[in-house]
Amino acid sequence: MSTASQAGITPSHWYNIIGDLPFELPPDIAQDRQGAGGTVKFQVPLALVRQSVGRECDIAIPAPVRERYNAWRPTPLLRAERLEQALGTTARIYYKYEGNNVSGSHKLSTAIAQSYYYSMAGTRRLTTGTGAGQWGTALAVGSRSFGMACKVYMVGASFRQKPYRKTIMELLGAEVVASPSGDTASGAKSLREGGMDSGNIAFAVTEALEDALSTEGTQLSVGSGEAYSILHSTVIGLEAQNQLASLGIAPDMVIASLGAGSNFGGIAFPYLRDRLRGTSNVRCLTVEPEACPKLTRGVYRYDYTDGSGITPLQKMYTLGYRFRTAGMHAGGLRYHACSKLISALYHRGLIEAVAYPQTDVFASATLFARLEGIVPAPEAAHAVHAAIREAERARDAGDSPVVLFCLSGHGMFDLAAYAEYLEGRMQDVSVTDAEIRASLEALPKIEEPELV
Image (cartoon, rainbow, N blue to C red; front, side, top):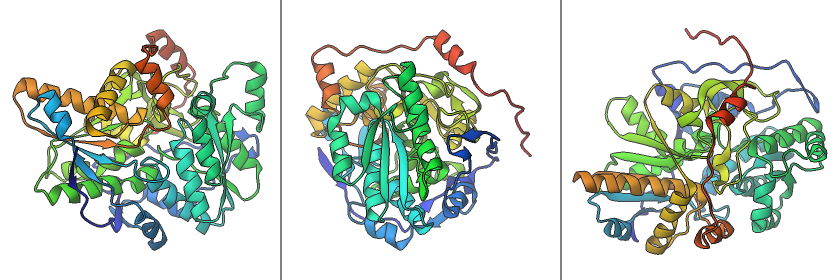
């Protein structure tokens, strides 16, 4: 492993891709429904709402947010020279490492920003759902930074597989429970019925939403799919551009794993800006698990963003809000859908998508750890695997592309998954067409609005 560039300063602005889109995004559709706390009234701070719909391309990062960013940003940009040599490839592989902060992942960039805006709006407590725990850990840090309490509903399977995620969140001041929990009406009902003991991220968000609606001074914060969370994450790609430019290099391909969208959008959107403006032909590749293939096998339809059936509908690639991901080690990539922004870009052919089985992903992650000295989180391991596959294709074709990927977090809380792989107990999880069709049958039946 060799350091390529750690130079530069934290960007002063985030990049808003909405301002460069040559098309209109499908509008959200509000639902006239009742939640556990009464009529659903989402109380996202106005500043975040504006960031989700505005067309100003450069959004200034508030001074208190940038000050906290400076504790770990800019993050290192590294070249995987030993990996290149082992593969015998002529490709140059660079990666942006986002695991060098207390939360261990890229999620802290939006957690700090969101916590700032919520605190400025008078919020005293935040709730959230988390899958593998990276987002919950990041929000624990953000909440603490701006004097708010935090409660995290963590997917039950991950809660039990990764006990030290709970420990670090509690160390950072958050309350953490397994989802489904007995702390909400929806969770208690699920536990009584015994239909979803392992949980899933959509249901964890449902519980967090119910809590927020029923508790004074509390609001829900989500970590990935919303436009503002991707916006805050663009510091990753902006830094990478500056760091590579200092070396006189521009990537031919940018790769990141895909959950709901902040990781991929964070590194790829600044590069897509150049493509949208006609100054680059860079390819941007999303990577998802075969067990949760929303882009590669889902549909582009209106759906709920959580499992409650009461949130505003967004048009996105989805497997259906009732989709239940089988047990696997993909961390935060188990979300049933993805960002409406990324969905629209994919629908128009501006980005690409691939899906891989988990045993192949962990094989690549193991190779990377042994050669480069960083254990990837399962989410980040998908990007590692895709980068290796692209480097192998380049080798076989005699090409020499520059490949950039986001190593979005470390896997030191995921050693149970690595043990399962190393001991030969890990199996690939397949999703049948029939299972996807059954989930999609529950999609809301609505008349889609026409775009001008």
